[in-house]
Amino acid sequence: MAIASAKKKDELAKQFKINPEVNAKLDAFMKAEPGLVEYVKELPRDQLERKFLLRKMQDQEQKQNYTAKVKAWLDKPEQADLVKSIKATVSPNMKPDRQEQAVVTQAKNFIRNQGIKLG
Image (tube, rainbow, N blue to C red):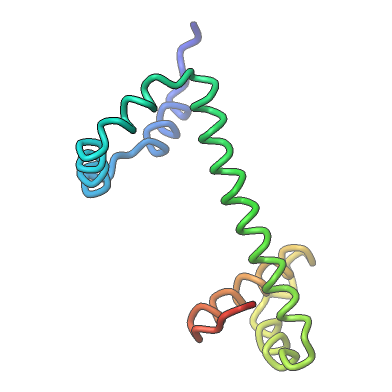
C-alpha cells in the first residue's frame, strides 16, 4: 500500500471537511429515518457508487441545460445591449472560450439578481 504524499493528504482533508451544522442536521435526519439508513447500509458498494455518480451526473446535466438556456436567452435580439455591456467588462486578453464563459457567468448573475425566470 502506497503512502499518500503530504499534498494528497491536504487535498483529501479539504475534500472531506465536516460542517458541524450540516452534520447535526444529517444526524437528525438519520435518526428520523432508520429504515432508510439500514437500506443504505445494506447496499453493495458498487450500487452506492453508482447512485452517488448518478446524482453527480444529473447535477452536471442540470447545469449544462441551464447554461444552454442562458446562452439562448442572450442570443435574443432584445438582449443585445446587455450582451454588449457584459462583453465590455470581460478582459480582451482572455482566450475566446474563457471570454464566452465569463459572459455567460455574468449573465447568470444578472438573471439571478433581477429575478428573471427563464422558460
